[in-house]
Amino acid sequence: MSLSRLSVAVIGLGTAGQAAAILLARDGHRVEVFEQAAAPGPVGAGVLLQPVGLQVLWKMGLLDEVLRHGRRIDRLYGDTPKGKGVLDIRYARLDPRLYGLGLQRGALFSILASVIDPATVLHADSRVVDADSDNGRVRDVHGKSHGPFDLIVVADGSASSLR
View 1 (tube, one colour):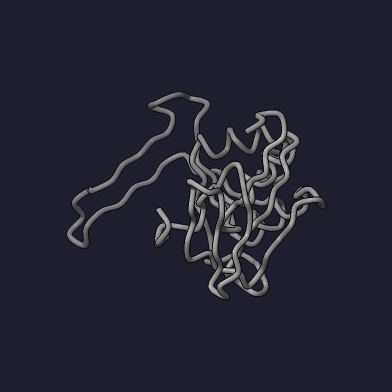
View 2 (cartoon, rainbow, N blue to C red; view 1 turned 120 degrees about the horizontal axis):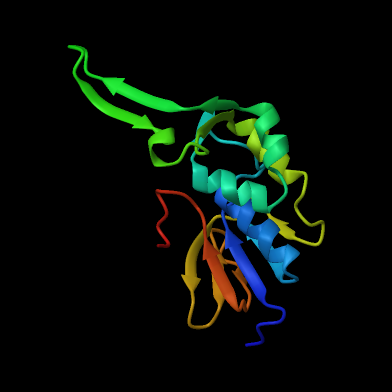
C-alpha cells in the first residue's frame, strides 16, 4: 500500500462523509463515496456545530461561509418542567474564543457539496451492507462488489450496521 495516493471508499454522504471525501481528495487520494439515498441531500432540519467542527471547517477554508449561514450559540441551557437545571454549557468557561453554531443542515450540505472534487465518484442509491477491510472491498445492497480500496471510511451515521 502506497501512502502517496490511496484508493478510498467513503460510506455515507452526511456531514462527516462529505468532509472526509473533500479532505482526502485534497490530499491527492482517489475517492469513491457510497450513499444509500438515490438523490443525496441533507437529512434533518438543523445541526449544532461544536468548536471542534468549526475548527475543521476553518482548516478547510469554509468557516467564513458557514458563519454567514449560522447563528452563534454561547450557552446551552436546559431544565425540567419544574425548573430544575439539567444542562448548562457556557463555552466561554472553557475558553473565551469558543462557541457553538446553529445551522440549517441544508446550508451545511450545500456548502460542503460545492467544494467536493469533481473527480470524486459518487455511487448514489448504493447502501453498503458489508465492508471487508481485510480485502478492501465493499458490497452494496444490490449485491455489487466494489474495490479494492486501501482505506474504507465508515461515515454512515449513528445507526450504522458496519461499525
